[in-house]
Length: 438
Image (cartoon, rainbow, N blue to C red):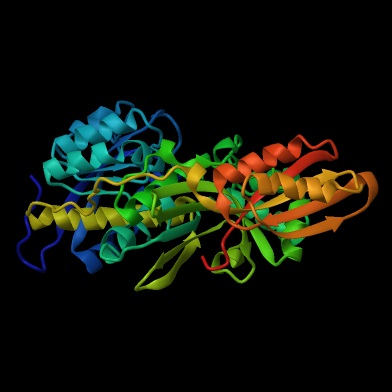
């Protein structure tokens, strides 16, 4: 039986069931044990880790393991009557999704760091938590140690936000920083990221933008109150970004970042992830290395920047621990928990209809009439050219074009026309340019 709220000086002990004991889970256990007195002094709460679901009970752990603590059956953790609160840091869609539903339906609060799961099954889990009257908290799912979920869902709940921009993947930001500041090639920067532990042995989820897309879905959903699923997010990765384009961006006063972008427009809510050129004086342009940052724009608050370590055991465990304390407090209050997050029906805008500016780099034969043909290709698709820059001569000429804002579908159609021009040897790069007033 969970202790009730009574004397303000009484300490309460909460039984924790942990799903996953990797980098984040192991760090969390050490924090709960090693900082127990400090946590109790601040909150009046003590946490006792009573069951942990793992893949291999024989693996050596960097925390004390008592008999019966570990199990390879994660449902034992959820069903254990001594477990009051379930924490999930195992990752993946399954069995994590069914485990969390089972925990919520049995009336146990849930804390998770699982961005993939929240992006895929968020509404289902939130509804289950509301029906059970227990908290479902996921602060660590987007920015690691950066507090962003609570500000969006609570502090800014009354602010009609219209844009959220995020550098939400430390691996890609490290790679682009190295390419920008040190002239490192993409392959070399990726290798360094692996050596430093910023990138997994298989970095596909990071460099393809998939990891950031799950976070973009969550950010857009919370910012605008309309659910945006992972499959609703347009995604491009950084694999095609070259040192040449980074150098041209610098000449024009821009920096290239992989951005998660959520916007509310007249056509509806949209979310996307792609490399973007942002002005060098934009707050996100100075975010270096593996640091993450989220930039929020609203009519009353203006611009807000949240920045810090977005991954790793310590920062992520800090966010998880904060949610554990918060969930325990709500549980002990003994009242029906009002849902922190509600979603209203809303239109999702097609990315094809979104208005964007493009940087286009062409390798062309430097001959009379080429520029006129290129201008005609853009004009026929109703795309206006803002500036043109030529580098080199003869067959090695590079033509750099920056457009005014136009519908994504029109920009694509114009570039398709460029590829059909005989003198255009290659459409070498296409990168979107963030509006200067963002």
